[in-house]
Amino acid sequence: MIEQREGETEIGVKVQYDGMRRVATRRQRYFYSPVEGTPYSLAAVLPDGYGMYELQAEQEIKHSPINVFKRRELESSSRLSFSSPEEQLLHFLSRAGRPGWKWMSVRPRALTLHNAHKKQDRDSYFCDKTLVQSLVRDAIVIKELDAHTGHASHSHPIATLMALLTRQGRFHKFVVSMSFVATRSGLLKWTENINSSRTTESTFQ
Image (cartoon, rainbow, N blue to C red; front, side, top):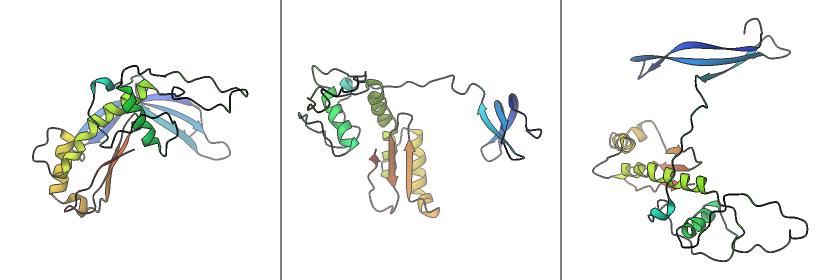
């Protein structure tokens, strides 16, 4: 990088954990290249094996009647106009568990000029099965975060941590007004920690 060469290399790097009480060695790959017109070089560092593994976890919606999103299921209707993406998601979740449901996981061909102005019927939709069932699975996994609002027992490690932080006043000591978690499927859940005496409702998006 000092000589402004382009290339890549692999180096064993020691990484500290737990407040520098533990040390581990891991392999990292460095990709470097000079920045034209400047005396600097730019490097991107990735752990060895990055991108070689994929996590797949889905929840069969037909076997999951519980509304993990804590919202009223929308009634199925012939209209396909929704006021928000959340409303659209709940619409398809309510239909997915009914007899005769078909997953349209293949995007339809682009509308031609001839039928571009035709009104779409109730079966003209695109709903990715893998993505939707991954969203439901992620919602079930992080549902334990609600346990920090005052439950007596916590079976999930994350719920235990959140309960301890709330009990010890850490949220207010460090002025943590909001906590959130984002999942691999794109599900975002956040909780406002404004006042410990008030019950805050977690929100999905």
